[in-house]
Length: 410
Image (cartoon, rainbow, N blue to C red; front, side):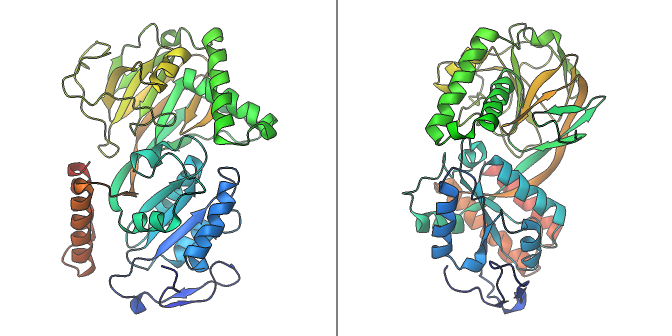
């Protein structure tokens, strides 16, 4: 709400002094909200949203990420029970906040995070029910009520360990990391090539990218160029793919391989066919002939192949599907040629290397409650929180039950 949070002293928003929060003074049913806004995301929308949220909430709760260090703010609230975070930005902003929360190893467990999407893509926001992107005529109070009533779900986070290579980024001044974390997907080949060219053009001519529509048009143009260039043809001869110790045949026609954690790609395309028993577009080989449902908290990645840029375009309008290759807990990739890659929309050119992709951790996310299944999950979550607050459940029991609840209410 807009009232000053009980037990709070000092100004967090001004950043002059560290506020003191007396957790004991807070009512047991108090669920404070911290809001982080990337004012640079979404053109003018980030700045507009910051002002609107500051009007609808106490300014002590709303923080501009260009000014405030999220680690410092989260530490201030670390002993406050039932706290929630709302992240307003793109996938990169979400990654930043999730990394920060994980690094703090908070006593009360990971803080659950809701997403108000800005910019383009926003695939994680879509699967969590927060929509494709914020518009200036959206009802801010309704959004805040949605966050209040949201229920916790779990999100697998994955780590790519890179060996025998440097990572050639689009900004040569950056150091080459030996590990990369992703939440949504990891793309190799055609999709990453288009993303890389898009980012290079935007870096060189930022004035050409002034709206969501123009961004999409530029993406389409770079995708059309790749239809002609076919720079990723023959991908099967340039890489080796191993899933849980078993080598996976890559189709000869493949120009891209995508490892999916969430079943939403490039702005809402459902890449994994969840229909039970469906044999549509399956590439048959080895033992990988039957597949489970896609889930963002089952500790498994879904791996698909795409034929090329035109195939991606067809999937965007629902005319085609990718080829399902495998599902696994650990994926090993060996690249013998340089290749464009991207994680969660951030592209680079990768030198030949070996990569191991494995499960890193799970984040607590807030899914918008929109149906009876969500209502049931919310009631169960409230019961778990009640039991945990009263020490009926220990932390390990709480986390185990929350994980099982997320699985059942997927």
